Image (cartoon, rainbow, N blue to C red):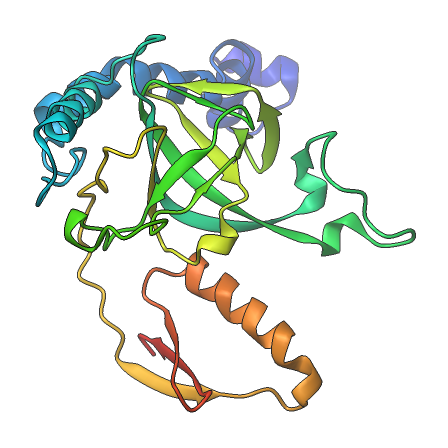
Length: 265
């Protein structure tokens, strides 16, 4: 070590060790190897460690045919199954806002001439594919909110729409055609749902994921209004983004037209 210090001119042994590790054992590779070796597989996570959180809620009604189909979906989610005949279920646990310059997608609508891509924001849902294969714009998926139950299942009560899937590459989002079970991806075209989390399925005989209950309850409620009436639409869009980005924030509209912002402080 002393010879290396004298030849390289380094003042500390730690700098030599850091240089060697960066060259032959990069931190990114070490972390990835540790995750693969120590963390449970997606199937083990749902069958051994997170059996309640990574499971669908029980049905509170429905016919026997729907019940058998629901049990098939439950079993597929529990074992993180993958195949052509396996139903597709994914769960969006949170939303994040990113600027358009970080998104690689040739099919995005063109920005106005002269506008800055870094100033245009997009809301992405971070999702885990629980079973099946999530596909981009090939299928219209049913969107189940956290408060959905079969007892209040009215006609067209569950939204149905296509989505776009993106691969998470650090702070960048790269569009992909499909994402198989067990992977985490970003999903675009969900901001219109105004839900903090949503369970996505390609069949109607599904239920929301149980998920985690963090016990966050708003402590402060205030009424917010725009300074100018012409800025009302901008305020509503901002409140929507804030509500999706922070699980502790709730935005409600009263019959008097008030916009109540509830948060932790």
